[in-house]
Image 1 (cartoon, rainbow, N blue to C red):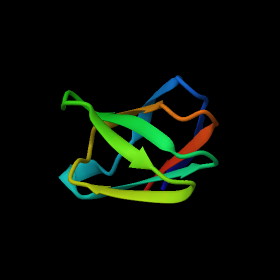
Image 2: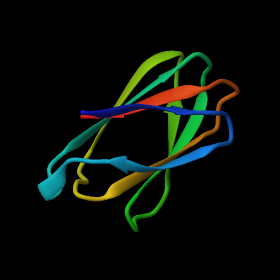
Image 3: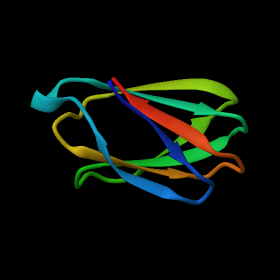
Image 4: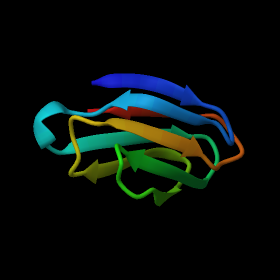
Length: 82
């Protein structure tokens, strides 16, 4: 488990670790306001994810790369990877 990492509105937090060896990574985003966040894993394309208030979980098939998350909500979010 890595994090939690706090990300302010419009901030990009990079260098978030994912699981090594290419296994599935769970990205958990906790937020106080709904909106979106961008996630970019390594050199892959950026994906936009819809966030609801509370805990949001995303299972992704990336590992061994660093994750960058941009907060597109109006409040701070926290990001944790498992």
